[in-house]
Each structure stands twice: as structure tokens, then as C-alpha cells.
Image 1 (tube, rainbow, N blue to C red):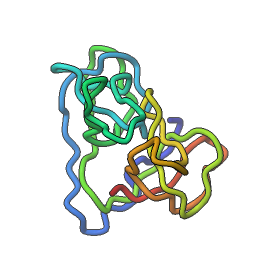
Image 2: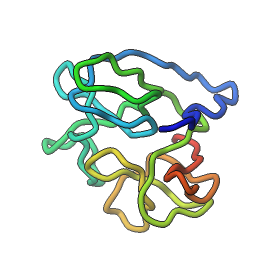
Image 3: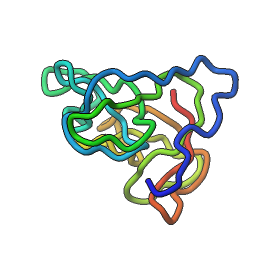
Image 4: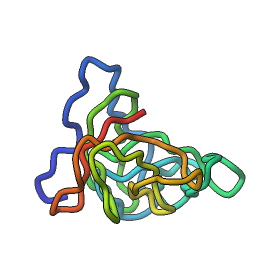
Length: 134
């Protein structure tokens, strides 16, 4: 993460930062996460239109700070929040964002991914994209 503030602005939206469980692996801040049993996980998220299908779990929010395997994980939940998402590929302002199977945000151009956020700016040199969560 190296100095990136993940929560940019809650804009008065109902934001919650909760410790939902312990991380099942080392996970970077700004990654979409869900639950795998009682553990917080990014690896269980399928990049399918029906997030939550039998092949994976629901994205519950975005990891607030880096999490180490076995340690508590703080997760930002809520809609309308401006956050910095760890992202991959080319992302420009206005792009619809989904996530890959590791919880990393990516540009969504087809129905292959559920839209989880809208990019407010292009991906920066640190690999983060300022976005609003849907």
C-alpha cells in the first residue's frame, strides 16, 4: 500500500469500517474481499456476472489496510464511498470496474464481471484507481 489512503471520502454516505474476521492470506489494502467461512478472503471471489454463485462468495467491501494471514482484517462497506482500489490493466475515468478472482479491480467492458464501482480517475503509477463504490 505504501502511503495510499484507501478511504478518500465517504461523502456523507453510510460507511462502515468493520473487522469481519481474520485474513486467510496476506491481502493488500484496496482489494475487494468477501468471506470464506469465518475468514476474510479475496481468493474466493469469482469474476462472474453472478458474484455469489456456488463457485465463490459475495464481495462484502474493500480491505481498509493491508492484512497479514491470520490477523484481523478491517473492511470498508457501503455504497457511494470514494475509495482507492488496487487495480490491474488499463483503467480510465468513467470506466465500470469489476474484480478478478484475486479481488483486484479491473475495467469491465462485457457482462463477464459484475460492476462494483465506477472509476473517477485513471489508474495511478502505484496501481490504484480512485473510484466510487456502487
